[in-house]
Image 1: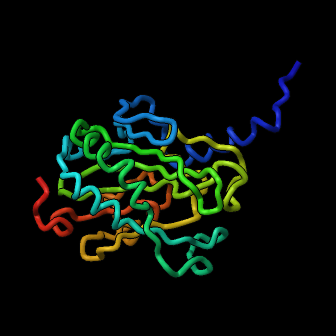
Image 2 (image 1 turned 135 degrees about the vertical axis):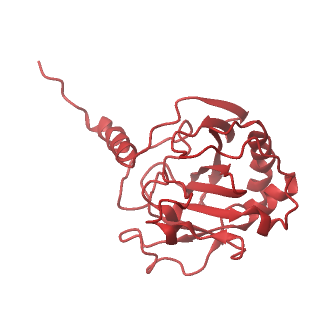
Length: 234
């Protein structure tokens, strides 16, 4: 007798298809740095890396706070992904309390990471309308002292859908680089001198942008640490 596929199983299959089609594979193993129901930071093997990362890497806590406080998001038109109909004003990606929740753990994670690893993070936050939302992503430093931050989710509600790509219940705790709403926002950086605009180098294979940003370079930001931190990074 043939197996009948339930409708409830379709969303998970769609997510898996999107994930694999983007050229990504789930992070099969990770080492916890901090793991609570509301906040998690892990070290995981970066299977998408084309060259070894500059890890372990030592940040001062205040430097990581500077980095996270400079990350900006801009909401985009959910149909075209162009941003033409979305917000014209960038917003901080992290609140002060959210930075306090993860910055120290990210410092510890990068300090313990190997050249094949990156640090991932996951936070349960408020979406502004008293709904449970997710902010998650990953971070690493390349051999030229450039920090790459991938913001897969920003105040993304895991149920009901926020764009026209999918509407399902999705928990990305075990896969913090998996986007819930792939084209809802784009990422930038407050200090434009330090921000290397990776999305403008979409066709440049030599540029070390993070290729597992789900065919959407606008989800990652690359920061020149020497420019941002005035060569004071250890």
